[in-house]
Image (cartoon, rainbow, N blue to C red; front, side, top):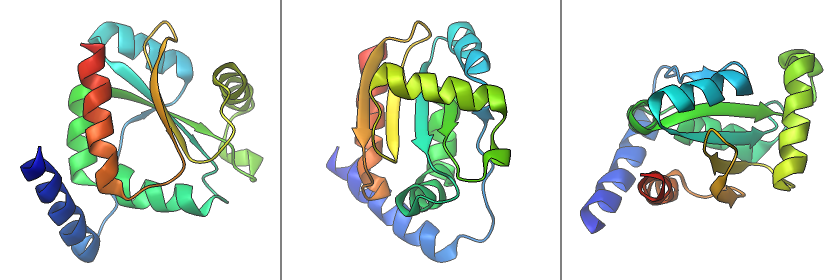
Length: 150
């Protein structure tokens, strides 16, 4: 575990210095798509509550965690991703997704940004992280959630 944490810290340090292009992450376009993919692939859903155009910690987390090769590889192997975005510019999210995101926020008692929530295809909560941390602190939590799900 120490080796993984040290290599993760080293990776993030190097990747933040040399990052040149944004890595494409496969966020599901709707919650229903995420639920169906979760059922089909037997994976947890990572729901990311963000204010993509106004929340500084969310913007930082998006750049330094979600758009890294290590996250891309981990998420493709273990997770289904859904972004519950609450932007100030309402044109960034469809009316239907805004409604679903609000319902999700109320259902799970989400009250701060960013929040990362893990649920299964039936909506059972496995865990959450509220607030912003250094990117390397998320992976032990992600691994714990995936192992708990299996």
